[in-house]
Length: 157
Image (cartoon, rainbow, N blue to C red; front, top):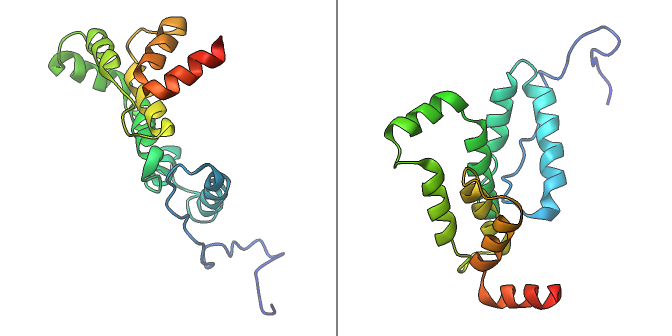
């Protein structure tokens, strides 16, 4: 690799280099490390001047499919402009948000979803319900598929 690289002269040659964008991430555990490293490299090489918010949104644009969709929705809800959006919900929402969340939590069932997808959806639904600790765990148990629930209860005894 001969030629002028700009090294030692204080020049930044990263602007001229091509950098691969990450592959879409669908929540597959074996792919998470590679996805994170690809995002870090791209951000270092191409997004140095971007705000943290812009970088986060860019990474989220590559999170698609599988259990990652539900996780992304959860994260995006957490990252929203808090008070302003809470006021909109308060003004135009369906009554007391906590009561609505408790009702949703009692209705949620795993159904045909994978456990990963279900867990992410359950977390999203539980947020704002005021359920925590043992009551939340019990609600989770009763919302998962019966065969899994039976095996879990047998393991607890």
